[in-house]
Image (spheres, rainbow over the protein chains, first blue to last red):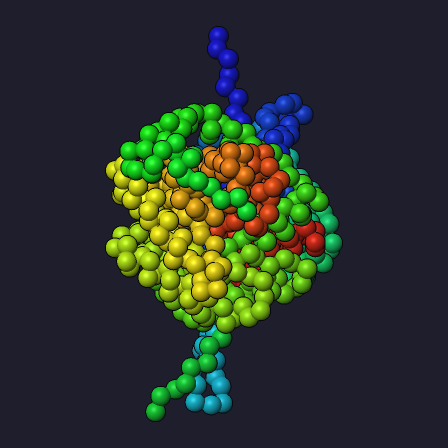
Length: 283
Length: 321
């Protein structure tokens, strides 16, 4: 007879696994209502620290070659595959899905990362442009990452929704602070462990577990955040108004499907800025 | 202002031997206790109105610094303009105490600051290494003073100090102090940089502090900011103890300036707590406590903006240095 070692689920900020600075945790129950685990409950200061970490990592990540970012995203898919059983188990316990359904969700999450990994060096080819102008200029539009993205993952999926929130943001060179589903947070914490072992520079993805309503206004009003994905929030209109203060890019809830094995190019482009350059043509 | 008699303090004529005896008779530093005390004081939580007060005090104690090989007249000018108006969105923001530059930039800083109360501090004496002949060091100092520097930040010869040549260091400080005198009899404020990161032990830091105070320093400063270990909280605490005890003994109040590596408001507030607890409120003024910093100001400004607007600010809302 041995005592089972219960895992403490912590936050993921700047490539490290800190407890909440507030010291708070909350109980997560399985689908039958029985206690499953204690999970760190992020506070406003944790969200602030996460934005600082995301900002610090942003220029380095955006400066990596698209090819390199693609390799790292693909590596994340590989590592996800290696942890499949743990994810399946957590999804089943939290949601009551069958083994087959839970495996399908993990498949979708992995495939989505592979799908996004392929896009890193193709965004420009598809969405960049040489514009016709009436003058002796080359006029070129290119897409640049917007910077730091704050996101609220959908509340009703444990893994695939989180993955489909993170991948479209980081594929182009953004960094992200993502608040996971409040009631289904375990795969988010496990996913952080995947990221930690997958060559992704610390701070590119920061995962907070906790209450979206509590953290929402702080992230939406934060002037060092460039875009906000409101998918998992219940007061999106209010947060959108706060986000207007510094003209954040906003993704409203329901804009994109978060439960499939493929993403959307438009979703990626929503988190990018178009930069147009006029260059004199030689004679 | 009381004048000290070094010979009375040391207890005999000033020779290398008597200085050595005096410095080595200072009590040894309890390393574990010192670090534990600094760690304990840095856990104190400063909130709301106290925090607002501390942020403003931190700005007014700042020596806004640029000491790069690539400094230009324009860069110094832009730093001075920043000191004059730290936050254009909020004109109630206090101004920093001084601008700290290399000697050749003093005239540009003076020109940009005009009639404002912001002081110009110049690093001198072959900063940061201090490896030059005495004549060069004195000329370096006089040059900065003649250009209008209000304060001189000198470095001690760490090589001499570590090899026990205390008299040499003592005489160096005295000579630089003399070089700080202006024609009208006033003198530029002298800050003595101990470069604590190179002094190896806390005992040495205590000895160097006392040696500098004995030789006539107006301020003792931790570091140049150019070596791997810069200002730390325990080091600053130790130096604050030294100036406090010196004041008790001589009634002469010496200032302390930690420099290098203090980048966040949180750090700055920890230092203020230590100043208050160790040296007391007499030192909670720009006259006796300074921060040598460059990136700290922006962080404090962002914290101030957070307090006044209620939401977190970003680096797009402060000027780029």
